[in-house]
Image (tube, rainbow, N blue to C red):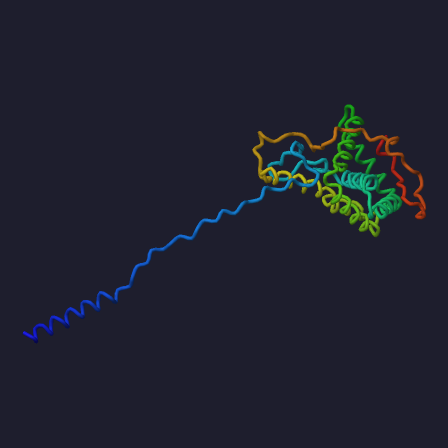
Amino acid sequence: MSRRFALLSVTALGLLAGCTSKPRTVAAVAPPVIMVPVPAPTMPKGASPTIVIPVALADGTYPTPNRNLTTAAKVWHLRAALNVAALACRGPQEGAIIAGYNAMLAAQKPVLAKAEAIYASEYKAGGGDWQDRYDDSMTRLYNFFSQSPARDDFCTAAGAVLAQSAGVSAEAMPMFAAQNLPALERPFTDFYRAVDAWRGRAPRPVPPQLMVSRQYASNMPMQTITQARLQPISQPVPPAQPRPQLSLDPSVFQ
């Protein structure tokens, strides 16, 4: 009897040992969900809730007056952009920009005159009232580069382009214009991109039926830039003057 009890006791202990060796299952507790507030996008400097910008094209770029230009047109558009910079850029870089622009006019006078003549002839070849079309395109071009929200970055780009233009030969000027015109345009298209991002619609391909035909947008109504409004100075003012003056090429306003 005692032997049988001993065997039963050993068997029970074995079963008990087997039960205690099984791993215990612990229920997993999910970490608490922490709600992190996402700040609203900041309105770009110079923008407003009602600002009008161009609608992105199918390739994600923006329409501007500087698209699909001939070689002569690129040279003349570069001169127009730098002309606006010399008229509009103020602050510490003002003197360098005006001096650089006057120097470029003097050094590249034959190249600029040829480019303007060829560019005008391209409009003339289209027949009709070509002079009005040409004048309108120049007004749109000046208004594009005059958009104030991108002024600071545009002036920085213009200063850099003018600094590089000092050593450019007449033969290399067309290539220089083609390479640097995009740098002068970029501050404005970057601003358009920032506005679209702020509105939550990053530029992406747009269906052709939704594309608009306008070439550019400006917050200001179209203004005719005249020689009288610009008040040109025929000779650069000596450095001793507190503010350097600008000599302008009047041919663009004729």
